[in-house]
Structure formats: structure tokens, C-alpha cells
Length: 90
Image 1: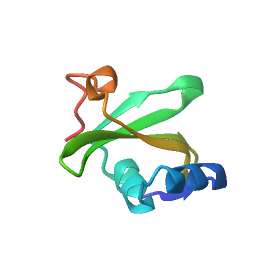
Image 2: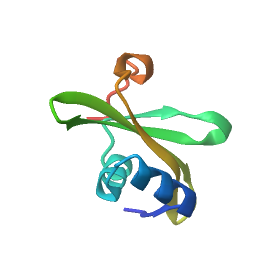
Image 3: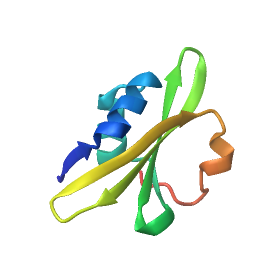
Image 4: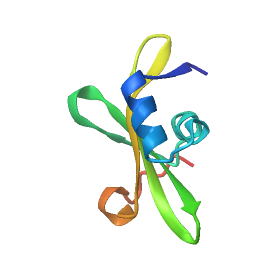
């Protein structure tokens, strides 16, 4: 398994957004789904419950030779907007 590095800006923003780094690493390592992002980046998806509501964590990363470099991560309640049916990785 490749090492995961979260760039400093993404770390600060995810802390501000209340997203645990463990969730980001879990999402990249064990995604429910991966979709193509812009500029060759990949977006790992994984659903989490926050309180009594389901959210989608989207972790945008670049795959390097020896690591995954996370450039941003955020939670969204608009799961249907981003989830691609038939692309499950499970």
C-alpha cells in the first residue's frame, strides 16, 4: 500500500471543515468508489454518517510513484451529484 501525504493546505482546510485525517486516509486506501478528476487527478469517495445524516467524503489526490498526494478533501450532502452508479469499488 502506498504512503498517503496530505499537503499542508489540504490539512488546514480539512481541520477547519472538521474532517478527521483518519477518514481521509481511509477513503484513499479503501474507497467505495474512485472517479476521474481534473488534470489526471483521482477522486476517492466514501460515505460517512455525521450525526444522523449521511455525507460523501471526496478526497482529491494525485497518484505519484511512491505515494498518494491528497490536494483537498471535503464532505458533501449532495451524494447523488457525485456518486457514479456502477462504479463501486467494493
